[in-house]
Length: 296
Image (cartoon, rainbow, N blue to C red; front, side):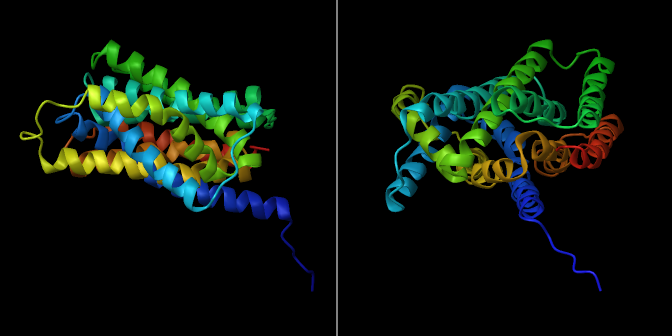
């Protein structure tokens, strides 16, 4: 009987996909929660306050576990992470959701794996196989095709803001994945949040609403969700998964996020999910298997 053993590389890749999948599940509620939150809070206050709350949690975690401070070479990459996923994506997506529905915005998440892969090659030195790019580009083209088919009638401004959000998020993901290999998964997002805290905390007070009387429970719950899960806990699993399995490969799991996000948008916000959006979601999900196989 042949002894079938699992190599450390395959085991790490498997753990990477598992951690990445958990991260995607936690991220899936981000856009619906953001849409609900901006019904009560301004996009600026939401962005700054979620980063402040998560930053305080990160500071506590780093203090409790007595984590070693990043060296000088790691500070600039951490700032890139902070600009990409602590400030850039939350703010741009919140501004976009003032013009478009969360269901429409979620479709753009299908572009995130390609952005992450491109930045992973540029910043992380990853080299996926040629067929990987075929599947990754196919998934992205399905998303772009859907947006063009809609004639951008939803809102050109909203679509452009979401596209910018995807680009800066892809950079933040790839940079974080590279750092996680030496700094650790949860440590990367924690230090990035801590670096941003001296800026985010004062801004959250500056843009704080004059009164909280008319803000309903849904907005508060959504603020809590994006602060705890979207801004901190989700990244603990996500960056660990990217470091274990590679940013380009594991990053393709983001193609699954529209499926979960659309379900939440329909259930929580009662937004109509058309057959066109569902077909787009099915199309990008179909590309995950191919990109996974040829990711390395």
